[in-house]
Image 1: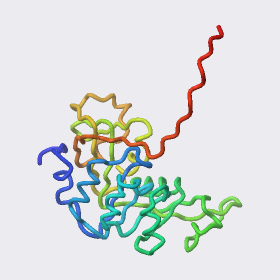
Image 2: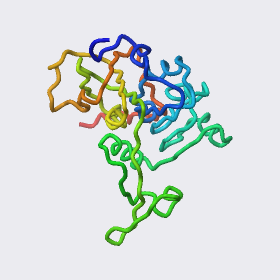
Image 3: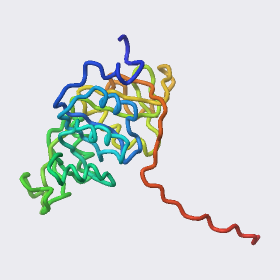
Image 4: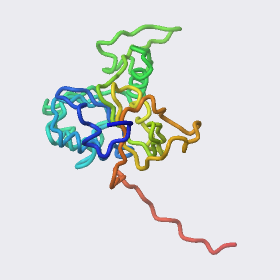
Length: 240
């Protein structure tokens, strides 16, 4: 297909999926999930996947669909959260898990996109996080060496794209999506709106199109809230 715009998730993933591959998937909780691309991966039936994502969706939604379908072999994450299936599969030994401090996970992904094979951080020194990893001292403080993360495929969710693949994210849906877009051999983005080239102020672009290979306009975004917390509004005051 000419250009970067594809008609649907299935066609955008055509020729990219294979058993045993590593996939980065954007999102934080249920915010900024690639809601159309994840079901298309499920339908493709590829298995033995290593998924790099902050978490693994929530019951019945997001990456949970791949987990429930037996397609995920390993998760590289920072949060198990409210996902009971994730917990059960890990405890039973059916799912491999590489748990990272959240900031370390983000930096490992950013390093992968920037071409930095390793870096040092104080986070996790003296804990299970640093077991088996080199630890060195700089200016009297100990740091653990972490390595980059890269993927065969990155799937991201943005708010808008132009036809050259430049992306803009909206509010908290931005989360892990921009760094993941840079760290995949191939990046497929789904968006809510596609506009002509030149529609964006260059200063407002979050992910330059050079990082994005394929784009689809998604449909029927649920934008679910994982855990809604509310409180009664205070009574209106009649005082002037």
